[in-house]
Amino acid sequence: MKLKVILFVLVSTMFLFSCKDDGTTPTPTDTNNNNTDGKDTLIELSTDHGTMIMYMYKGTPLHRANFHKLVKEGFYNDTEFHRIIPNFMIQGGDPLSKDADRSNDGTGGPGYTIPAEIDTDKYTHVLGAVAAARLGDAQNPTRASSGSQFYIVVSEAGTASLNGKYTVFGRVIKDASVAQTIVAQPRIDTQTNRPKERIKMQMKFIIKTPAEIKAEYGFDVE
Image 1 (cartoon, one colour):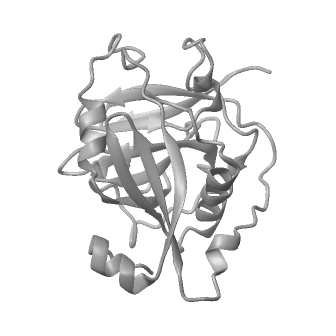
Image 2 (cartoon, helix red, strand yellow):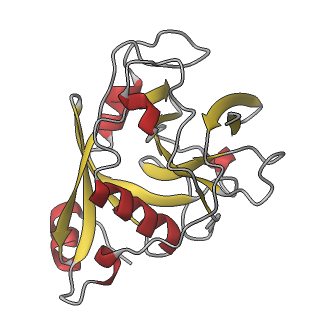
């Protein structure tokens, strides 16, 4: 299959993100989205550099359901943050990053895309924002998202230049400093922005009530 390229724009500088998400968009089912006991779902993302707690927005239901589905399947376990750009973001979620060949990291996915759910009135690229990578506008005028690759904003000031261009579908609600530690790791070069040492992740669910989430993390769920 011919590799495509995800274009990621920072101001006037263009970074290339590759992807194989060529298939049709699925309709994911997310049982964690519809808890009947008043509880909600958080995601714990662990690395050798620390652990972050993330929340996926109900206002982006397709992205939330897809992300929860992949976490439930263990899809993200042992994938890596394969691209780190200081004062910008860290990117991961490519299943090809699990193998020994690092040259193709950033070119994989689950084989489908997710329709854009861009809502700049509610979700923007603030510190800790979780957003979906995607193909560039020339190949992807609808701005559909990669089926699995995501990035986390590490800039204290956020990256407002990306607002309206990519779907922000979640946020790190505890320990975004871990993402900042990851982005500070040495890189092989500034072309691929690959970290010298492989940074693997593990993900699992944390189930809590909205009141517990507010008390423990200071975050108001939707």
